[in-house]
Length: 158
Image 1 (tube, rainbow, N blue to C red):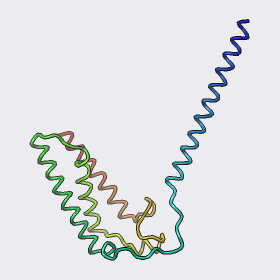
Image 2: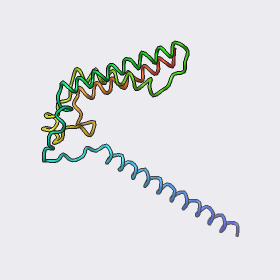
Image 3: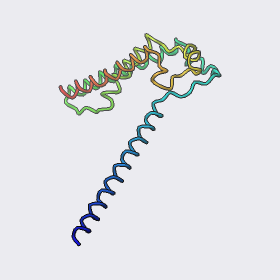
Image 4: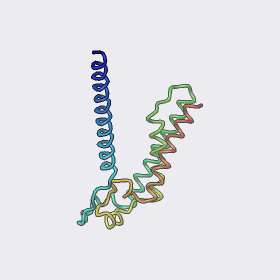
């Protein structure tokens, strides 16, 4: 009698384990497929989008907006350091955001976005994925993120 109960209990346990692993593998494959769809570039339309706002697309206005970003980011970073050296607490978001804005603005001053080249290459003026971003934009976005994280680290380790 005990052998039959033991075989049934072990069999039921093995069925539960196999079912669990099948469901886990299924969920993992589903998540991997969703992640692949998320990072896949959207299909490029064959029709060009019409030009957008002429003010935003002009290099001069991009440089002016970037100059405002540099000013706001530099002032915010200076103010954060002033407050941190006086002994006040440091907030995480401004410690990352202000240097990020300053470096991003500096990149916008040096390399304004060419909407016409982007429209010619991808059919739209604004990049929607990382692959569609021009190389200088990728570089200064990465440098801006690093600047924000280094500033946070420096503020936390003072």
